[in-house]
View 1 (tube, chains in turn orange, yellow):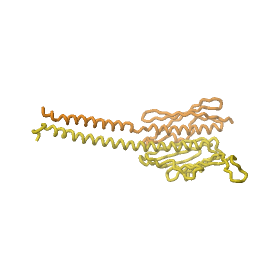
View 2 (cartoon, rainbow over the protein chains, first blue to last red; view 1 turned 90 degrees about the vertical axis):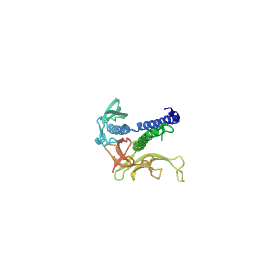
View 3 (cartoon, one colour; view 1 turned 180 degrees about the horizontal axis):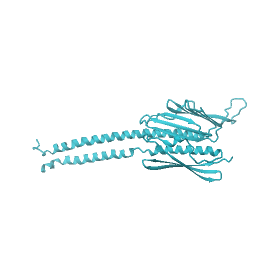
View 4 (cartoon, each protein chain N blue to C red; view 1 turned 30 degrees about the horizontal axis):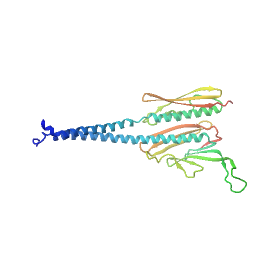
Length: 132
Length: 186
């Protein structure tokens, strides 16, 4: 065993190499973590434009004198396949109204569920109902 | 062979470390390539999302104040016309500097040419592509459609496909145009 005294250099080198390899591996693996795709950003964007559509339809009807809070957009816009690997995701649109004279603060809420997680987007716009 | 110096330490050192090192490096190289690949796709997807968002947000702001709108679905073209005023450039006659032409009309046009969306203002003669040509991922437009679901409401559907990941993003929205006098969809 006393002959291992000659191999101190190798043992030191082992320690240095192992440290380098471990830090290298850690660097690569830490980089991999945020690369997992998050589909929520795209669904959120789609939902924002869907809420805009609903607000535009409400505004058009309000200009003719009626405030209608049902879903007025195109029915096919309620489902999307954006980044969902051909599994359609359905949006639920609800509108609420806080009237103040003929000015209405209309809030449109778009809700969806992906991988068991509920998310929503809420947009508000002041809409004037023109009395006929 | 091993008797003369170190009792076989050098042999044992490399016999154990070399195969381990090769295995470890192979694994790290595989993971590293995967990380770069996923990162490339992520950038391409981000470009796709960003371009759809950019086109639609420009379109919403332009449509909102339009006086006349003409939408053609055959070769997707969307023309907004605004009433503005223009200062007269004096060239003899009865006009002086500072006179203005009221009801001067200006156009802004969105059109799809060669799977890209182009944007044109009256003042800029060449047509500028506002999608595609991105360093991080090429995109192409697969659908650009207009319809009129209600009075003075323009419904737009935009679908883009990434050339890198072949993912598609389809966004529909509608814009109410309160000051619009004539709105036609062909």
